[in-house]
Image (tube, rainbow, N blue to C red; front, side, top):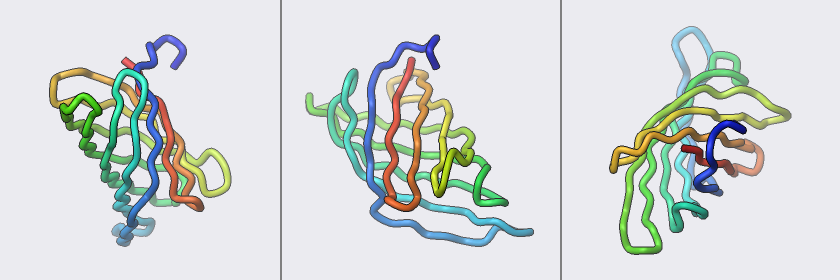
Length: 124
């Protein structure tokens, strides 16, 4: 990501996780999170991630985010990408998103399934 300009960082904690089986094996995860964003955007975020993994280590995800910014504005974000195992009970999520005001961004984050935290960086 060194060729991309960092525009914000986020930190979030899961508030709930629902699981369902995938046809042929593996799981679908619906993960609801809440947290904060700082840097180019400042404020609170709510997020839902839908992740699917046949082997519980690698797969894909989509997400939607609602941002309630400190300046009184709000923004929604949607997109998705890939997930891969990066350690014991940890996933790296990398993807691309579009904000409600048309900004294309890239996200790169790490989810710790044991502590139910998701932290990462947003790039232009």
